[in-house]
Amino acid sequence: MSPSFRDGAREGFRAFLPLSVGLVPWALVTGVAMRSTGLSVIESVGMNLIVFAGTAQLGTLPLIGAGAPLWLIMLTALVLNLRFVIFSAALAPAFDRVPLLQRVLSGYLLVDGVFAVGAERMLASQDRDWRMGFFLAPSAYAWVLWQVFVLCGVLGAGALPRDWSLEFMATIALITLLVPIARARPMLLAALVGGLATVLLKDMPLRLGMIAGIVLGIAAGFAVERWQARRTAP
Amino acid sequence: MNEGTLLSGGWLWLAFVLIAVATHVPRGSFIVAGSRVRLPEALQRALRYAPAAALAALVAPDMLLVGGQLDPFNLKLVAGLAAFAVAFRWKNPWLPFAVGMGIVWLGRI
Image (cartoon, rainbow over all chains, first blue to last red; front, side, top):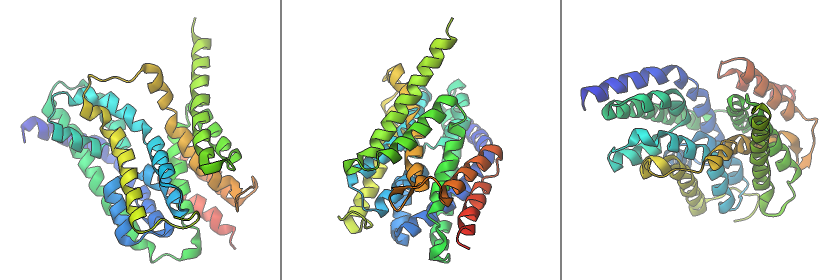
């Protein structure tokens, strides 16, 4: 471990620390939600280790609980994770000439919080070792924090009564994720159209209503963005 | 696999693997492929709206449908909107859960 890796690790950890507190309730809720969907402790821990993605886990649990077709479950997870394609594309220059194994590991560990806090500084640094330290340290810390508190939720869920509508906590967790996104006007519109269209199209066969709703939401947001851009252009 | 029952056994683990693939392929995509490959600008911009639309598509049925039927005047909608408002206004990560679940539980009494 080179000194500049250690330097980067220290700074990355320090930058992510305040934000990491927000992972705790979310991890607890994910743990409880997996158990209240009907997964066993082993299945919950397995899902959490394999998937390691709160949004995709919370988002697919209702579908898993309802015995939805596998293709729909996978497609839903894919749509929820499309943002990572953009994060990944944005970060790619920072991983230039990094060994393949480290790049694969970094891909597995990539989460929203670390990207939000660190992307700019990572891309600005000329030192490859520093960048890897700056990315890997907070990412590994986020992984441990996530696994520990999801496990607390999984084990604690049994002690909670069944008739408390605890599955609604998963809905609230997804709503809180929408908050920072929906501050921008076109994003809010994409969400409103996506949500309402899904509800109105609920009788479409094969649950295509949800996919159609999402596509309509994306189209609405993108259209308004274009329209706004044209209005502000000279 | 019947509609309306939890996936079980091998199907469940297969679902986990598929969700994992749908997570780690997007995450790893450009980091692993390297910076030579680029997405078209318009596609990148459009994709930014995917999470917002998908999150809303997931929560809207929970808040607007009761027993599969549209019911805009139900407690879960109130609880959901309250949780959103609280999260919008305050940074405390616990507050939306306390307020949202509080409203749902109040309705039980």
